[in-house]
Length: 115
Length: 115
DNA sequence: ATATTGATCAACCAAGAGGTTGATCAATGA
DNA sequence: TCATTGATCAACCTCTTGGTTGATCAATAT
Image (cartoon, rainbow over all chains, first blue to last red; front, side, top):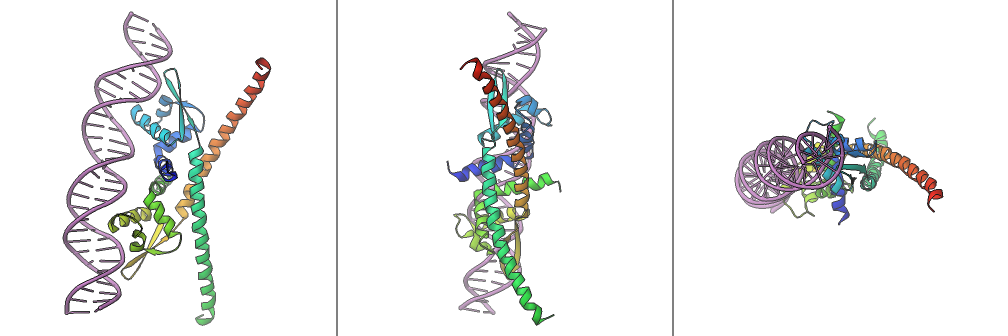
């Protein structure tokens, strides 16, 4: 799989408040589906779908124990996304710093012309 | 606007390869719409729409110069998203470390029982 | 003056996302 | 044994998304 598609899935999964809330809840520890669904004003089915999205993004792992499905976080894709974003930000800000430098230089030069 | 909605827009905007490519191109400097659209195998209109998505996410700023529209990066929302992700990752990994510690302790205890 | 270029707007379309309800199935409890 | 619980599957609905084409409009070039 292309790393781009990977990043797509991760960011898409994260770009939903319900799913982010689920992840946040999971950071407190392994939780079963019904328990995860409880705080939300939507059907169990809807939450189940959200979980599947998180699962295909590999942000979450499922373990079956009897009839219960226990979910746990697997933060690796998150780390990858973070790496990508951080690299981008670095590029951008360095570029902006250069521009900033140029503008300052211009300002300095202009100072003698029209005070 | 709730910061959650803010984060939504940012992550949604980033969760598309075309839009990420546009941002990457913009990291090389201010660019006009037609130029941004050139590498892509889609209509100018389609790219124009992608740009609007980036714009409403405040990841990009538009400046009109004659008939041309010049786009520049505004990385602040990116930084915010990064902050959120980093905070989450910190929570998660710290929790996982605790689990890891427990597992190690269990292993150590088991070592005397069944070698 | 007129043609061309840069870009958006408007209408449309197919596919996907997020939600619903109802059925099903396996595991547990009475 | 039989009812209940935990969860998914299947079908359906509505709204959004990503794309198209054609029209429009302002700015530039010939």
